[in-house]
Length: 106
Picture 1: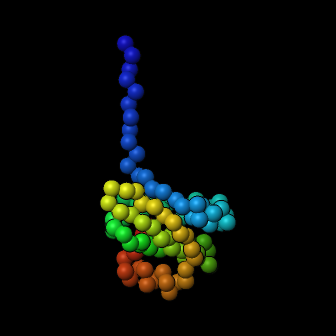
Picture 2: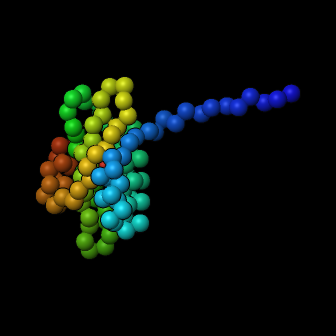
Picture 3: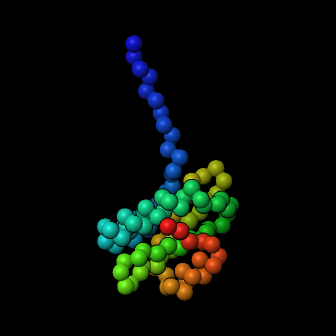
């Protein structure tokens, strides 16, 4: 008696643009890993919005100097989130995103 192979669908799927990957490669392995872990945490909570890019902010607490960053993405109906830009932001920019509830909460 043969067993049928089971397929488990991955519920957490997103795409990273080459520009985001290049930005991650310029960082240390620890920083880029922590950013990707935050991305995976926020993906299930992102809202779709057709024909308009969105932004989400994050922070890496690394001692005295936290690293504030933002990700631009597209997330349209019937598609997966597509992150196309990763860049550093100031603490003021991060607080603006925080007030708009557009940050990755740990």
